[in-house]
Length: 199
Image (cartoon, rainbow, N blue to C red):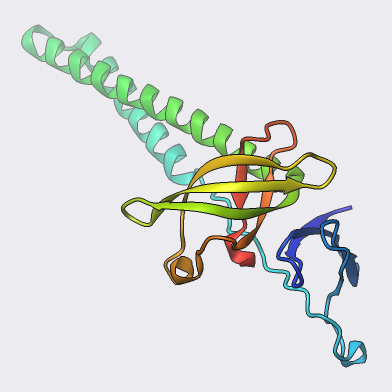
């Protein structure tokens, strides 16, 4: 059963809701939030369910670059085999050069695909939680170091230093004591992602 992350409108904690469910109970404050799908729900709390930021998995450009460099390298090397004199040395050198570039792009593609698979797995398996901001140290270019008190259901609260980018529209709202919905890696408690789209 697929689930989505949402924000508890009472305490700000993250909720995990099964697709198609019309309500969820917060494990932090006990409040029940409802997915507003019809007027019949009246004044029930509105549960904010936003899509997470997209995970980029488009590697078409890298594939094209690798194939192009590979063909160019093979062509230059083949030509160099049959060339003579200086042309042969130059052509083989150029072929090796483009071959090295093609290998570099292959390594880059493998790393990008690994990061993509890891991010997709994290989004699907992360545990919902809540982080309370204790201290804020703002760096340059929209980056900040936050001292957080992290709470995940079934785990003891812990303090964690987290460096993150902050959306420009949310900078004025980032204050001490603010509760942020988070997603935490199920096997690595030091890895978390602040769910800015739910703030």
